[in-house]
Amino acid sequence: MRAIILFDLPSVEKQDIANNQKFIKKLKKIGFYMLQFSVYTKVLINQSEYDRIIKKVKQIIPNKGNIIILKLTDKQYNDMIYLNGEKNKYDSIVGLNNVVYFGGDDYN
Image (cartoon, rainbow, N blue to C red; front, side, top):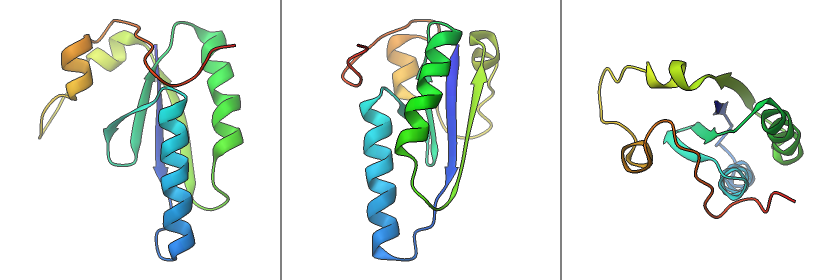
């Protein structure tokens, strides 16, 4: 299972840019990695972890912008078609069906 976060955040003011960078840093800290600009993904082991991640993301979102989270099964994620560009390096190294925890959250 995958959680996918898609976001469109304002980047006009310096403070907006700083808030965006903090948000991305916090996403990475809880285990998300960049799929493409403004799209981050995380491998999850079950529904309860997905529910937990939603709560954590709600705690770190900036005040402005549009943020969407969605859940994909491994099959749906594996069926993703790259129309242009290359497969994410993380997926190439780890594989599409493996759960690997690195850095990020302490899972207490």
